[in-house]
Every structure is written in structure tokens, then in C-alpha cells.
Amino acid sequence: MIADTKEKLGTVLVIDDERGPRESLRMVLKYDYEMFLADRVDAGIKLLREQPPDLIIMDIRMPEKSGIEGLREIREINPNVSIVMLTGYGDLETAQQAIRHGANDYLQKPFDTDEIQEVVKKYVNRTKLQSRKKQAQEELTKMTQSLSREVGKTNKLTSLGAASSELVRDLRNPLTIIRGYLDLLTYELKEKQEATSAEMSEYLDQIEHNVDRCAELVESWRALGRFDFSQMQRLNLPKLVNDCFRDAAARSDISFSVQIDGAEDRYEMLGERLQIKRALQNLIDNAVSAVDQVSTPSITVLFCLTQNEIDIKLKDNGCGVDTQKLRWIFEPFDNTATIEKGAGLGLFITKKVIEEHRGSLEFESRVNEGAIVTVRVPQAHTALGYFSSPESMVQS
Image 1 (tube, rainbow, N blue to C red):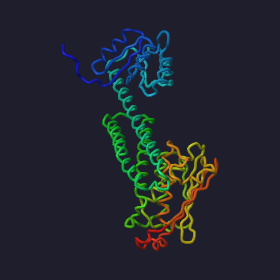
Image 2: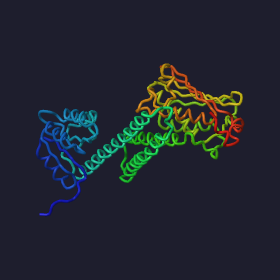
Image 3: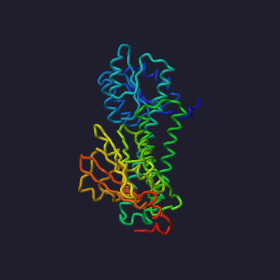
Image 4: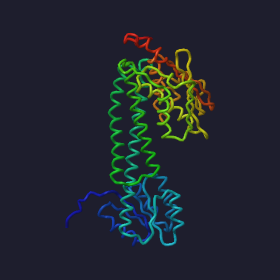
């Protein structure tokens, strides 16, 4: 007898009190999947705890505990495993109830062999993808927490020194790995030509957005203190802000508006485009986070001229910041930042970037009254005097 050495595509747990359907599913699927069978909900849950499957196929009508009751228990144990319910003729309403309680799909008995193979393949792949996404998210969270802990150990005043430079250099490798991992998941989804759910797409988008954000923070951190005079150019600030708003609008349903006093071309500064855009994007992203729980969120940017300087006021109607905490708002890893909302580097880096461009950054806020962030930078013709020579860049 030749042993079956074919690599299994996944693990399937069948919970059904009727022997016929259990054995039929085992016979149909055993060549491609590792099969576990149970005749009661409790027995199935025991197997679930011992050997987490990629897919559970469960009958709705069973003695002792129904499939609906089993569904609720399984979802408490494992919210990500795919579950397909089996239902007899006339149980359509019950099957729809199962969907509302967290089942992914249902099939009617007697099932078609080709249909069951297609459904099993689809939902086994779904669970594997969910597991890999969760792992990628956990890797990203661990990396962010590690960065916070390690830099937090150093003196805040010396955090731009050799120790943090080494840390940032080390951070680039896991960021690259996570980014590649995300690209792999996206590629495999396209190769399989399977439609993704809105939840799955949002999850991938969030991972991609946060990885990109971490990568930008790393690059901004590394660039501090290494102002590149050769990259200086005239920047149209209203255009940059609108670009940032377009990026933010793609991820939210917030009302954005830009108000400009006078002609747009008067609002030009001299600076490194990438650094300034990152700084503005970070301020807007912070505002987006602040209005997350507001019923009618809005963010407004006001442009005006003050003598030879450009004032940019960014207003939001979000949660605001306690006045006692405002004094620490620009400190790296201050206690107003959380892992969920960011590493606590954003405003610190943004302020440094603005100051390197001979500007200033101010933050006004009260709890539940929103916030006003004021960026003040010299107009391009004024900045030419500051940056006319590399030696002028060295200024306290």
C-alpha cells in the first residue's frame, strides 16, 4: 500500500450528529485536507482547542446543543476561523440567523460535491489569510512598542545621538520585511482572483498605511540634523496641503476645507519638499485621529500672511488635549501619545523639521473643544537670506 505523501491544503473540522454527512464530507475532502470529525458541539469544541482548524463545517440542528449555540461558543474561542453551516431543506431562516451570529456561509443538504470542494477551498484560504494578516499586525505592533521602549530608555535631550541612530538603522530591516509580507498577501489575493471582503481590504489598507507611516517616521528621524541645502526649492504650501488632504480623504469621511487669504502663489516657502510634506501630513493625520469619534468631523486650514511670513492654521473639532499635557506635546514619547495612535515621535519630528526651515510650530487645545495648530514659516524671498550659504544653516 502506497502512503499518501501529498501535502495537505489545510485542516477541516466537521461537526454533525448524522454519520452519513460526516463520512461523506470526509471521503470527499480527505485527499486534500486533514479531517477531524465530531458528532456533538462539545466534542467539536474540544477538538477545536486541541487542533485549531482552518475551517469548521457544522450542522445547525443537533441534539444537546444546536449549531447556533455552538457557533456562539466557537466565535468566543476563535473569532477568525471560517465557519460554514449545514442546513436541511426548509431551514433557510435559521441559516440566515447563523450568518448574523458570525457564520461565513451555509450549504443545504444534500450538498453537491463540486460545490463543497469550492466552498472549502475558499474558506480555508480565507482563514489562512486572516491568520497571516494577524501575524503581520502583531509584528508591526511589537516593532512599534519596541521602538518606544528602547528610545524611552535614552535621555530625551540626547535621543538624536548615536544610540537612537543605531536603533533607527536596525528598525529599517523589520519594516522592510513587514512591507514585503504585505505585498505578498496582496499579490496572492490577485493571483487567486478572489474578491476580498470590505473588512479584509480595510485591514490590508490599515497595515499598509501604518507601515508607510513608520517608514516615513524612520526616514524623518534619520534626516534630522542633516539638512540638505541642495534639496531646497520653492514650495507652494496650499498645493502641498491639498495633496495631504487628498491622501487623508481616501481613508476617511471627514469634511476638509482650505481657506486662502489672497492669491495662492504668494504662499511659497523655501524648503525640502519631502520633509515639509511629511510634516504637514503628520499634522493632518493627527487631526484626523482627533475627530475620529465626532459625529460631524471637520478640519479646516487657514492661510494668511504676516509681514514676511506665512501663517498656516489647522483647526479641528476633535477631542482636544488637556491643558496640563500641552507642555509635553512636542516631547518624544510624551504621555499623551499611545501605541494605537502612534509612536509619539510625530509632533517632535514635525517641530524639528519646521524649526530647521526657520519656522515655528504652536499648539492650542482644550478637551472636547478641538485644537488649533499654527505653523509659521518665512516666505521664499525672505528665506533666501537665511539659506544663501551652507554656513547660515548652523543656527541655534
